[in-house]
Length: 73
Image (cartoon, rainbow, N blue to C red; front, side):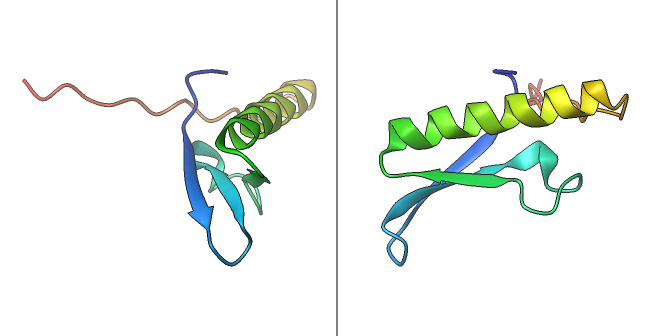
């Protein structure tokens, strides 16, 4: 689970940290969560990732691969 990406952004309008699970954007309608603190947002993001992975595994659906940075050599 820890290999999946999360984009964390502060929202002035919401006064919250918003989290988007990047690898899940094409798989689910709203691959996002939030938190009052950055730490809470990260924790909530990890919980959402775990929830989706468990549901996909239970339903025998394909699971998106974690994205990785490619080393430019």
